[in-house]
Amino acid sequence: MSKKTVYKLVILNNLVTPYRIPLYQGLGSRFSTYLLLSGKESNRDTWTNLESSLSNVHVRDVWGFTLQFFEKRRGKIFDPRYLHINPGYCWELLKIRPDAVISAEMGFRSLIALAYGFLFRRPVWILWGGTLLTEKNRSYLKRLLRQVIFRRVTRWISYGQTTTDYLLHLGVDRSYILQIQNCIDEGLYQNDHLPVLRLSPSPTLLYAGQFIKRKGVDLFLQAAKKLQQEGYHFSILLVGSGVEQEKLTQIISQLNLKNITVLPSQTPKQMPAVYKSADVFVFPTLEEVWGLVVNEAIWSGLTVVSSIYAGCAEEILPHENLFDPLDQDSFVCILRKAIMGELAAPTVNKLYTASQVVEMISNELMGELTSKDDRTSQSILLNTTAEGNTLT
Image (cartoon, rainbow, N blue to C red; front, side, top):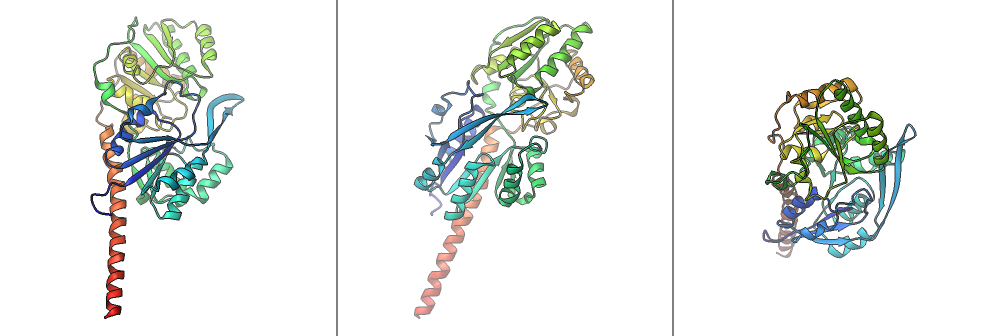
């Protein structure tokens, strides 16, 4: 290939998320990019028709099917899980014949990507987010698959430091890992937006996300009740949906919480106005690969308090803004400080922009692809020289 050649890049994923749009667009401006999608998830009902914004990316739906099940802990639904089986990726990869592949998970689609890379000698990267905490309860089969196959993969794109720590624990060499930082389209949250509503009394404490046990929303409500009993005045805004919604409604009633508003899940374009309606963002998760809502809240200028169990927590937030949601005293203490305005002001200094992440991934891919071409050219030149010497 010449230096002016545009390389073909295929990205394998299950759906388009709003967070990935600037990444796909950025890669689409540098490579001939194909986004192959297979495996919808029922808890993403506000993420519809996002692929229409990817004008410089070829988006294709790929045949496959998804099995949904629920992880239970102590007899209660903790988190919905999905198993994506996507045979259609095989055919599409053979048709497109990409120069490089990025696969966004450690499962079936990545096995297909790795098989393609092995057969056609093409580089394959796995874009991965997972921490020592989030992965400790995975099934024996998944753990075996990772030990036997994935620990031998030599190209990784890690969400951040906690993901890198997990990969190192798995046995992956550090030199094989490109550590980026999970990011969003920050421009969407920096623009001026009018609040979707104005609540009183202030400050307003916001939670946005799924209403499931793993997110710790019930623990947030219990801590908030303690503060109301102490005489503090503030508003609560919950935005989301999920299998625990009815249960949370019952908890709100049982605790007799005051000044609380619940809104259904909002579309990505509506969320900036939601953040403008709040003063403090509360992220009480019990287990999280990263937590991009924290990025959104910081870019929106909110004070953020986060659970220590979020993958992003130590990397992008001050230590004094972290708490243990399983320790009610810790939770109440940090909410009290947030209400009193005693926590560190928000800063974006630790956050990567989408353009920075695009540049990091592009440089990684181009470095590999151009060096591969150089090696091929040198091999051809050596063979030609050898043949010439033989003839003379």
